[in-house]
Image (cartoon, rainbow, N blue to C red; front, side, top):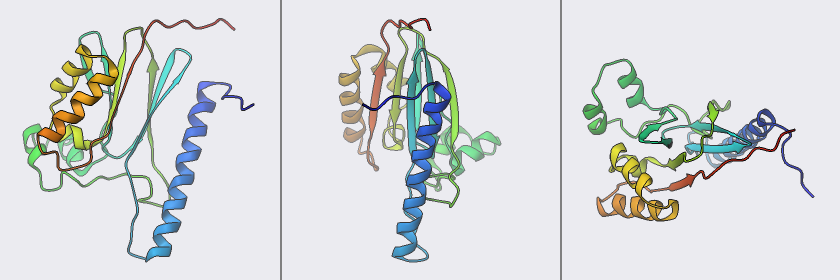
Length: 189
């Protein structure tokens, strides 16, 4: 049989190695198709190991966490608009209407060397996580996403959020995954 990773660090490294392989392959395919072609994608991964979580991402797909009544993004967009926001050069409202809203600064396949960000933490019973593409966040506000995630079972929340994005004429594809954590028991070593 296949054995899993020995520890959280090993698990994270395995996933990053796979993503680096995908990055190399996309670069090879793009080069074969023509020198000016780029084949790239955002990526967002949520890993669980024992009582911990780890988020790995590149681009503007997101992971949110709902803990109690607090719903907040765990990831930070790699985008031109987010950079302008971080510098205080535009407001959140201006960001939504910005002409460069689709321009990301990191992606799998965009550069020879893949640049990923990582955030990790401890899982608490009752936590819920939501992974999504910008097809959701462009047309559904964070508070709405949190309200749906907090009030419905995971599978139903996903269906409701996708339907809401499509009903609002979402201009992009809509990918949504929800995970709700029940009671956690960690076996002692």
